[in-house]
Length: 531
Image 1 (cartoon, helix red, strand yellow):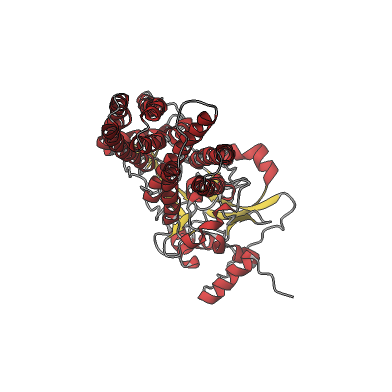
Image 2 (spheres, one colour):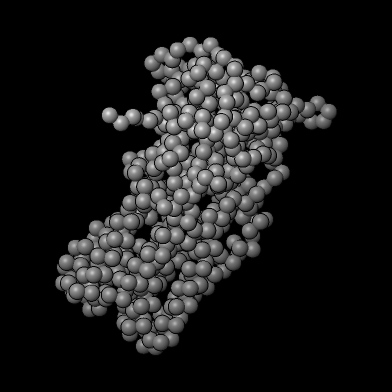
């Protein structure tokens, strides 16, 4: 009979193999009863901001300096000379409803019976989606290992009746381990004792950490000590190109589907051909493999489809993968000269898969932990980029001399291009009149500053290029097509396609670079959290 190894056993074996030793600090915690779990208690009145907990955590777990499972945030209040400095030492909050677990596409997170949210390193592909989902920015990417790692409350020590390394190291006794009744915590105490200054809304993940807070004079503002520091987020170049190209492909396929449908209904329009299908397939064939470059362990990319139940990333991977397979099958049918009704029968579910894939793609970003992304406009913008696919199909038609079909495609192309401009205008108005009473004002106002101060030139370029290549040049191509000037129309459409694609890439780059996450206030020493 083979031996079954649990994640905890693997962790303990890793400890033994690397020679890491446990301390001798024992604890007396009651045995967990049904409905209870372990949690941290942090006494903000006792913490002196020495960062010993950070150092002890890294030493205990063999992490490099830029991988921090516990971080100390700094805040301040009052006015000189009557000031107060506050510290918040935070690691994983071992939430009752952890967003990292729900969003993980490979099921690399499990919630143990003792309540600890445990990361199974062996299953992780390093997609870093959990680092976006967690409102506390707890999971951190370990570049050397190519995976995400996080606090496990020194579960091996707890099982041996010993305190975690951070608890042992704190000279002020500001960190403790407690037992909490989850239902009672949710019902009575969470909103009072589970929130420190500038921490996210507890309803997002239901964190279990309990805080003891100092008395702050009424009306005094508590400011993050790093509020003057503003850094752009990671550019995520593989995802920039992957999202734009897959949206182009799906948009083009929708155009192809309606072209086939209208042809079969007897309208005097040419049927789609093999070249159009190959043109639509090409962006997806390039874009989908590019997404693997974002992963820490790209060889395991196929496992990203494991969590269809709760992960939008799994759903996107499955839907767009099936979509690409369906377009490939359709190319074969066109090559073999299959009848139109059969091609339409295949195109309908493939189009549905593509549309759902782009919807799932947008939902990946609509997470509460990233306020600038968590808006309806994200989904609309992702679908709006589909006009690139209409331009692509129109370009192929122009080269094959089908001027009337080009004219038919230009109407939805122009409408989507104009709608993209409307979304940019709507975003500008939203940030211009952002209310200081908005609960997410701190993050959204910083996104506004990034858009206006750091990337103002790119935002203006984005708007100008969208107007030129998504609206002006397609309108010129209409004139050429109506005058039966096929070559001029084709050249104009190529320029429009290239320029509009570049414009969307700039827009997507700004999308990634200007997001400001929720997280730990005053997080000077964040490590390599990808904010």
